[in-house]
Image 1 (cartoon, rainbow, N blue to C red):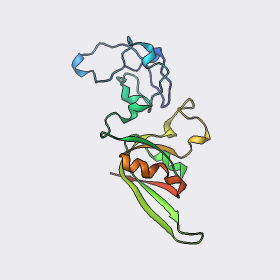
Image 2 (image 1 turned 60 degrees about the horizontal axis):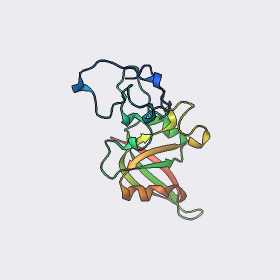
Image 3 (image 1 turned 180 degrees about the vertical axis):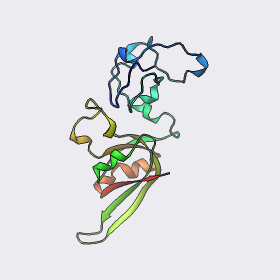
Length: 170
């Protein structure tokens, strides 16, 4: 379990986990044991904030583990949002519709198209510490969502076709 509160993006060290006696029936799958080989998790970054005493699992780590629990075939897709401040409203698991807004010609009206509906947010740097996966201004407005393969294809090149906005849904 976590030995202390850890900020999102924190790179794990051996001292960040502490052993605790708990019933084997309540230990979740994928838990990180302090006795494990340190090469498996030391240096890996946590994807969100972790509270002291929380049982750490592989799903809390950045990387392919972000997709644990997602629908089979899900893909993690990074998106650059037109309004960078939007990421401060988001949390992991928040469902969003991804909307592409493009102008039709120089003075033409804007066209809005929903590219993906109710996709979950996997990662956002808004909560990350300075040692996050991608530090600095290059993460402004960046968010990662889980998408189906068809949605991922639409989303991957969307920012080249217009501005991307998110609508939070229930």
